[in-house]
Length: 63
Image (tube, rainbow, N blue to C red; front, top):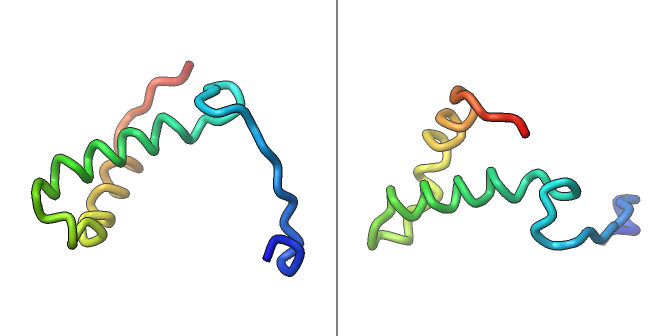
């Protein structure tokens, strides 16, 4: 599939903030979904629009 879409696959060290800055937002989103869903895991995707809005409109600290 990578060849078909001409995507270069690269590997980076896990949990390295300098090389993989998306880890922190992913952790925040995962926590938010878990808090909103509670025991109703089947509808987690229905919360995404609100979560995305919250992430996009909140202030983020830079390192």
